Image (cartoon, rainbow, N blue to C red):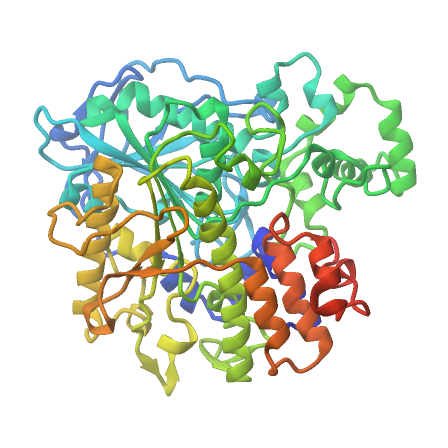
Length: 627
């Protein structure tokens, strides 16, 4: 199915590299357009407005007018800065501030590499940006609330849990038109957000020792919302967490986390994933009896020691590490600069890196795979859940993969082999849906009768550009639904490549419907017929009768219910029977992708016996490598 450079597409999503290569190959075209890169119209004055003065328990705060209406408060700190001794610790409560905090600008993004589509988009591509003092949130509200207590929608941004920032998302239209309170939140990313090492567990409790600091940031932010959102007109007893991609990943993790109990009341996962790392994978050396990953904390310590000049090679570094006590190791890890840390993960300075994230630590998350923690027999949070994916998820990646496409003038994509491109994007997209929707919804539904809802986003009405049909080649790719959920379209000078006058009526109608469904779900736990009860009825996914809403424009068949769910076995059979694969190796790469995306639903033994051993000459570990 895939050439050697794209052997592990799930690994590419786990890594920041897939996002960056797409942005660079496409000149920023699809990434800014698809992922709601907010080069926005002229902003309202940044001066504070009297109507935006609030007095929550955290301290008085003043904001200003929202870009699309209502009021906004940007850059509110919700925890003490996780710097110095607080690096690799759970977030600490911030003391009440004195005076009035001017919440007029976004806080600094968390440390990451700059990209064309997220975080600090003004910085040079691949440069190191952000600050460890990054735990900020933003609040958007209607201008006039009175005595109402409005539903709260708590947005968790995507970016692989490696990149992203709240400056990318504007909740003002959603808040003002749909009469909800929108909160967008930043959390620690990459190794600063997820890092486990035995030396960091000395003398601390199980929460501090967990390594799941990014999730703990989100829980602290939810605590802040529960304590303070009433001052902004929000109902602390009606909070919906929602997020896309890695944001959806974190939504599912919060569903499973015992520490998040009672802090939210509905959950929406958009194009989520369900991966998690056992502690050994996150910590051990690659040559331990129970091996860790290439980017485990153990391997990272060795690289840091070499980088600091304390060892000349890996074997010497192992000797140095074994001679250090826990306190010395902890001081060493906290004493390295951000530049040293990022160079350790990305020694070639490419602006790409990956690391383990979402740990099965036994405290913040159950000591089992995340997808297993969401089974009906487990004690996840019993709240209404909405899950969905987009019809063409994988097109975001393969359209900007040199093996599948080239570009004109660094901007207009040209697919090399249309049939192969469509086949491979459809295959990975279907695997993604099995992992993110069908598998999870089927497990949740028996425990949440009438409270699990699913969707597929189908909008693909982009125009043709210089003979390139972007509706076919990009379509409903990963992230395209985000502008529809937030309801604004201006995404910079290339906006017309995706959003033009011809598709405006349809997309405005679909966005209005989606905002209505999302906020009605936030209000009641059921999308129903939308906020004004005028849309098609969105029915629940039920055991034995899986059904989902198809979200599309009136011209493309409108919003409607459809039925059916796939399994990894279904996809395996279709791959085995498809005569279009160019070789056995490519067919085996497609089968290997099932395990890579849904390892617990399609374990290695399934791959080994597929087609009576058709892949015996192509071992799984050789195809996937160390992802």
